[in-house]
Image (cartoon, rainbow, N blue to C red; front, top):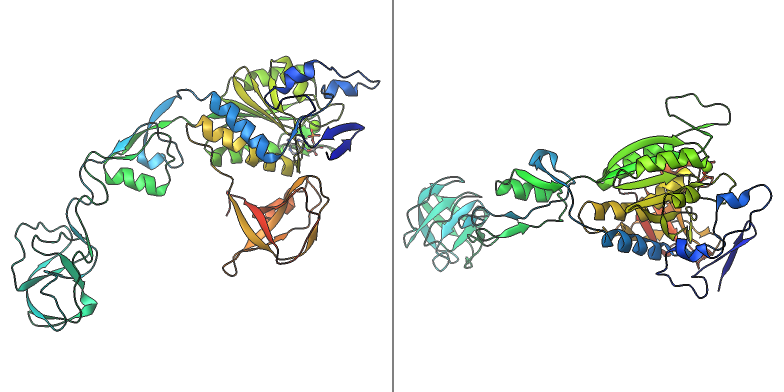
Length: 454
Ligand code: AMP
Ligand code: MG
């Protein structure tokens, strides 16, 4: 088994021997508290060995744990104008058949198909446009001029496109044979009356909203956006409207996390920053646990002042992973605390962003009453050969371009997981599998799209 050593501590690329993946880490690790060392390093991370999962396993863990706690959600009635991105909490049924009449899909002539043969001539006796009431039937030997969206009269079984006819006065000459049913959408063929067209758990995009509008369902019962508490940590972090001291940084993570929560369908509740002290962390975590989920940034690595796991544990958290075989983002932590999902994401901004996409986004989907959406992955052709250290799955800031049919992707130069500027130039993450070192130009690679801008 591959071994990756860090800070003198060994991480295995799999489950610790004799331990079961189902066992929450907190229970497993209880058995072996780390011996406190001089300098207090043991205070930071209590765990002797970490439970390092692949990113797929870690995602599955989140989906399994949050999915298991899926119960009835709070809902509210929302106007169709305000419901974009929300998840339906009701069924939507049709108010009548769709289309409500046999509808012409072309501008042309309504005919009896057997009469509209090549060279045939029919007398045009009426014109009918969209919205006109049609009560009479088409008589044999005649045709009606008809517009797109108009009701096809009884007796007609085809609409011939105007482009395939010529006309002199009232006489229409047909150039080719009409086929029965041609250019007509039959009444009720899109949906029957009182038919369920949208179900609870479906996300409302523009097409779904148009469908609700079509059937007159303009007030919709939707799941309330899950409230996601965002807590950054670190003594070096100041508010974004403060001028940082020479060795301080502004709290950009709360901003990116709030944006990510928002586009995933959650409501961000920004709690500010906690100092690297267990008491301050504890107080703010307690506040965060009042919301539907809690996302922390920073304080989950191996440093002496990385205290988030301990603070969570003191509040009763049960952990399901505390390391994932990815870079950036390896120290990501997920647990349940007082019935709420809690995520400890590493503080370096690109790590925070990647781990949110991988692990927090599916939890927000589930908390919204929807299924967890699949990762927006696609295949692309590598535009420039590259080399990476094997052992972890990499998610590198990259640009994907659609010049031809097959998209091309290129990793961007970056200074590591603190380099927000590199990610602001990227529109995706290039995934390098853990077992690859060199990838040649032209090879097929996987790409995780930045769904906020692509
Ligand atoms: P940590 O995971 O706490 O060790 O943090 C790693 C690094 O991430 C820190 O040294 C900071 O440079 C950066 N960082 C931590 N928190 C934030 C934040 N809220 N906003 C921006 N950068 C941060
Ligand atoms: Mg920190």
